[in-house]
Structures are given as C-alpha cells and as structure tokens.
Amino acid sequence: MYWRRFAVVLATTVIVFSLAWAQMSPESQKCSAHMKKALKAIQTYVQEWDNVFPPATTAQKLSDALQDYAADKYVLTCPVTRKEYRTNPHVTWRPLSMYPKLSEVVVLFDSVPHKDKKYLVGYADGSVKAVTEKELAAIKQKARLK
Image (cartoon, rainbow, N blue to C red):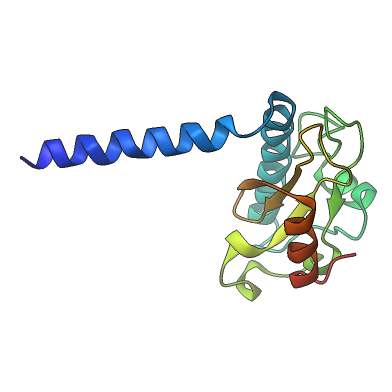
C-alpha cells in the first residue's frame, strides 16, 4: 500500500523536475552546469577556509582565489555568452554563519541574458535558477547588487 504512494510521489517529482529543466534552452542548460561547477569550487574554498567566503569584489579576484579549486581557469565565464559572471561583493570574507538560508544568498549571476532571454543566478547552496530580467532586478535589489 505504501509503495504505491511512494511510487506516485517519486514519479511526480521526476516529471516536475524534468519539466522545469526542459523550460531552459540548451544554451542555458550548458551555462547552468558550468555555473554549478563554479559554485562547487566556491563551496570547496569555503570548507577549506573555515567557512568564510572568498574575496568576490570582482570576478577576477574571485577567479584568483578559486584557481586551486577549479579545474578550468575560465570557471567564472559563461561558456555560451563568453561574458564573466557578475559576483556578489557583499559575501567577501563573510562567514557562512551570517546567512541562515544559503539558498537565498546570491553568489554569481549572468551579466547578459541568454538567447531565451533568461539570466542564471547561482546561490551559496550550489543551486542555479533561470530568471527573467524583471525577476533578476528584484533579486539584485533584495541582495543590494548593482
């Protein structure tokens, strides 16, 4: 009896995530995977440096800090648009403990939109979300980003 309920929940979850992924263009999917690698490098840095974010005042400073943690020196460059991701300078040298919800802490975001008119936003928990220009403006305002 319980296995049927579990099977229905599992199938529904798979369908919902598949549909959400399918809404992104192939270019945005490629960029999303790349941004997740950058976020993983940041998370590795944070773990090794006593749960403190790396310097992120510019993409170059963040890139320099991540050189030992990322396999690709262009980890902070979108592979589709060839533009550097923008960074959140407010997390520079801040401990993780300052942020109760890492899923709301913006770390990286696209500087220009993709062909599907979406921007990708990377969060401190490693998640990436595709948003419209209007949604990005609201996210940037909330995070006090320019």
